[in-house]
Length: 157
Image (cartoon, rainbow, N blue to C red; front, side):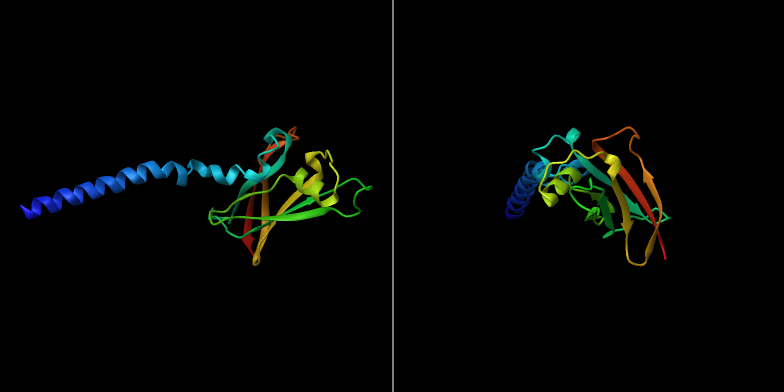
């Protein structure tokens, strides 16, 4: 009799844990990195009015590289700055990166709203001990706003 009660109690506890996991999972886990690509800092501006770069950094064998510095350089009109404005983003553990909205960063750095073309932005990747061997721009050539996918391949130096 005692063994039957123990088994029933154990099954009840396991069912409770399973139900809790099912109810909590949608809040904790997002498919395909939704939290990664939906930056709450850019939520006030529609994506089609932003310039945001996303992509990956890999080695020639296809292994993802973490902590790669993604350098963003923006050429602004001469009246605002004599030198390009630069800032960095970094890849995460699975080799993905996402920049902040380039227009918002530039506007906050120079203190004025600018409507820059996407062609004024240059992007590159650096990692100590590696050299950038390939840059693959997977965005449309006519695209001026939105998400720009740029992937990098870095070889050991």
